[in-house]
Image 1: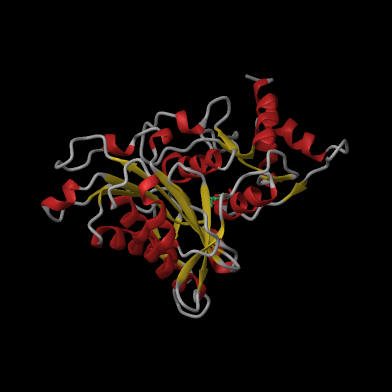
Image 2: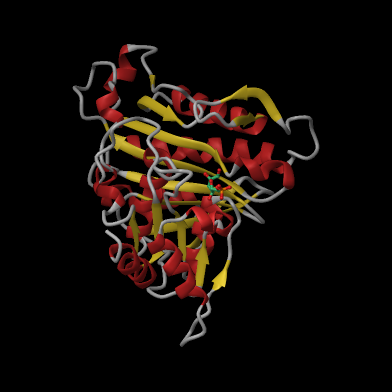
Length: 335
Ligand code: P6P
């Protein structure tokens, strides 16, 4: 169902039966994420007005300064997901270990786990540039009724049952998939309702935008350097346009609408890459493939990677199919 302008609530109800595991739990889960997104949106939109900017004085497992909004967004998503008694486990970029939701026996009966990057692009918070939330949803693989284990979280991305992001930009949007295409909903802040504004989102097969932090160029491996030079050559529809916001969600969202490729390669400085597999790359890769795009870590498909640890980092390239395939040609010259 993609009746334009329907609300997110109506969309969930009208499409619930098409979801292979439809038991209502996933719908309740998406509804919980919707609520948390509205709460975080409210805080992000007033970030400049109250003293919640700046580091919370703590650092997270990534060794990065935790911004107060990082901490707040993390708390809001965990609180909402826990209170709704829908999931049996949560993992977050801001939490060293996964959280087993076991406040009562009912919790263990729940079959979904959620992995989140509560506020991606947080370095942009203090300079009023858009940021985002990324979420990834799996069915647990250990027996229902028992506490979740690390095994439940270390599933390959192809096992995801749903994934999406919230982009807190010039407007706030919730974009997600349950494996049947990608749909975008825009928040009407006056009434706090998300409306279906971008049904059936798809990456154009070709694009003219490349997104990469070119300040790291000297550290990139040769295949990536050669592809960047290819983007900059004057031939055919090139040179392409360089656009890089420093928020994965925003760069991904723009490239999905206009066509483009996002790259965060490994380098001599970040040998494993920077982006986290479980709660950044896997959900964005699921969305990319559901939107007719591609997402690779190099030779391999992101969704096929077998995770080894919760905060594992991988190189990440995703976007318009033909741009990613062209990049892959350059990478394979050297491997
Ligand atoms: P750099 C934000 O911290 C993030 O995880 C992505 O959202 C973003 O694309 C990237 O890192 C920016 O990293 O090293 O270019 O500042």
